[in-house]
Image (cartoon, rainbow, N blue to C red; front, side):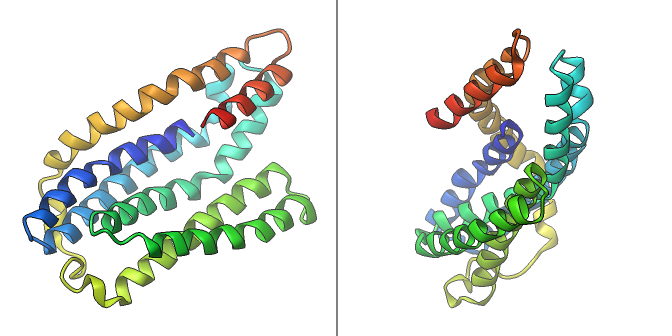
Length: 223
């Protein structure tokens, strides 16, 4: 979860950049900023996927229970496709929000949630994949959400001025974007990491299976 927050924080730079461009009536720049964010978040996803692929050895080095580390490693590996979808989704959400267009986001999220329920049930219980099925179902749902929003932006007449197609200009001024994105990501992540660190520390207690389960449920309820 805390690695997904990295992407959410990086995407927060679009709140500032797209908001400024929209206010200045430089509508084409909304698409440029969004594409720049997509590029950076895809790179971040590739880096984070390496961490997720090595979740098991990382947790073992942190003296976590071997069974929990193994299961967490399998789940994280199956969740890697979700990283890329989540990064793109954050960019599309900010692109729409800064234009005060929110109903399509509600609609696509609702459709994705409705699809997620049967897909998750089939993959978790009927296929026998268990936790791996839950991770795969999450990835499928996120990619469906991304696809629905991308199709809406592509074919809707509302974005003729703000989305003019992919441009090489998006690969310029990356440092300018990162100056805003990195502090935003750190601000968001440090707040949540302080809570999630408690779960890691609970793995060092005498009964890690029970302690981590209880604290994980507590964290979900807190959020």
